[in-house]
Length: 91
Image (cartoon, rainbow, N blue to C red; front, top):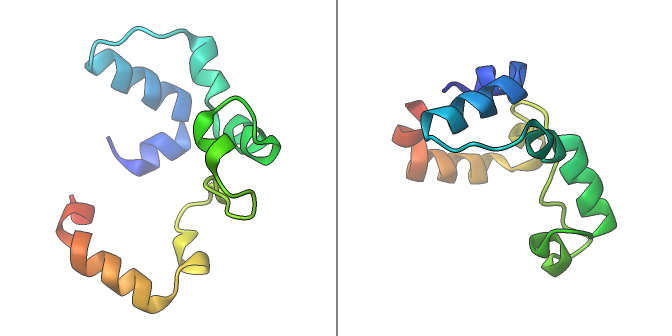
């Protein structure tokens, strides 16, 4: 599964992945876990233990934009990530 496929049609990509690993889940659950809904829950610090335990000033759900890491991470941090995970990221 390519990131671009997930980004272009997230609902279909998730359905395809779940079908491949033989997990049946409702369409409502997939829609509930949309980026916009997750971002909203995080801002309200509700419903998910991860968000309840996080620091409100640090957003786990960032912008949701493709390649936004270039706006968030410093060049040395990007280089370090590429050094450690570069081969995996190329796959």
